[in-house]
Length: 187
Ligand code: SF4
Ligand code: SF4
Image (cartoon, rainbow, N blue to C red; front, side, top):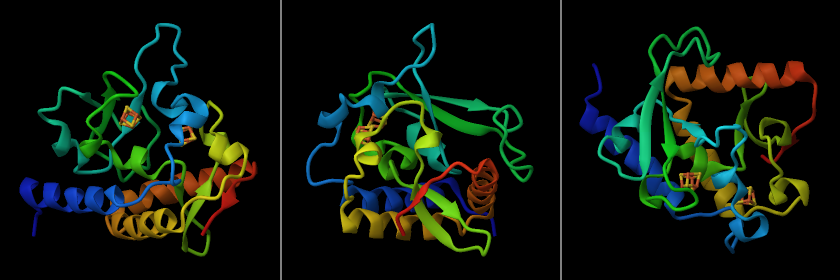
């Protein structure tokens, strides 16, 4: 049975609510780095950087003044072959300020990244190679809050029940393993 837009929105909201209760550290880690992960801009034109959305998340941004929602062809962004539809992204219009109540999952769970090992186990990792700037949490090995790790793991367990999300995490994980540059497994 096909899931309705309303049901999809409710399930994304549940994920947002779970992650709303936790944060990586007990203080605002943005103070360590000038909120580099919000404001980093590698383009010469100083264009805003886009955040990938997971399936259904685009429904949260239809009427937002804080985010510019747009779609890209999945082939242009090197996604797994199972992703036949467009991939949605958002640009933060005025970073680091935004409507935090609807910030994307990718932003909420950072700096943890979901990784599926070759024996199909879900892990959360820190991977400095995936970001073009320095995150002090990774660089200085700052211990993340246990509840943040626990809830983020639970959220990814839910998310990878969607075969598209599973494929994406698995696809990125194999590429990461082939790259042979290290990453740190947190759980
Ligand atoms: S997650 Fe890392 S890069 Fe982002 S604000 Fe915190 S310390 Fe800075
Ligand atoms: S969604 Fe908000 S908190 Fe996340 S990167 Fe954009 S401006 Fe920063």
